[in-house]
Image (cartoon, rainbow, N blue to C red; front, top):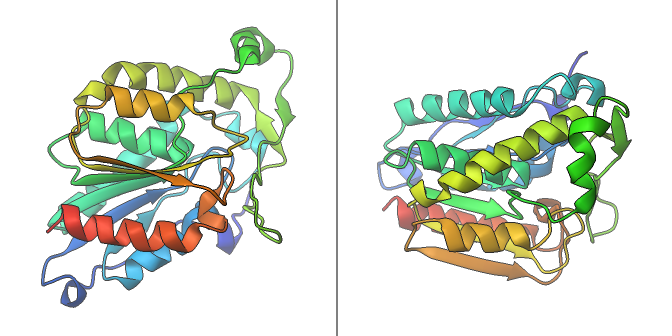
Length: 255
């Protein structure tokens, strides 16, 4: 299925003349059932500050929810690794950033490559859920292909993250299996962290934030609470603050 241009991967070259002569890369990752569109403005702001930016499209995304149901955590993480390797080879330092599932994927990368990740910026990262109905997913995914969408949890009127209209259950189960392995390895994460977390989030519950802050080995962790945004905060009222504060964070941790 063809990918709409708005949902396609996005990249921008480094502009070292804006970053003190050094080449700095930032990987920006979208979330589950979403696309680069949901983090495009975030990425473009970082590119405007001179950073090389890569926004991968996760396998199974940007086309149809049925296609997503044929992919899983290993496929998504493989694409994240590929984009990171490209940035790492071409730049002096690389920061990773992610929204929701994207946050979990870049934390996985930071756990696996602690010497190569200079910093981690997270927006409502997902590594856990307290929903009781997920316990039925191992069986339910073979009976029901999808549930209603979890998309567009945005407080600001007129916004559309252009995510899928359904939540595919096989893919959702794979995501949660990936979370389980990630949680066991969060102690290997030691890069500085800037985490934005919406006070009111109808998709990711507060357990993810608590687990991350209590489990990582990072000694430089800042949690920034967002009072005026829901889950997809990169398209919400706090989007500009997220972009500018992330750019400042990147400058600090790569100085």
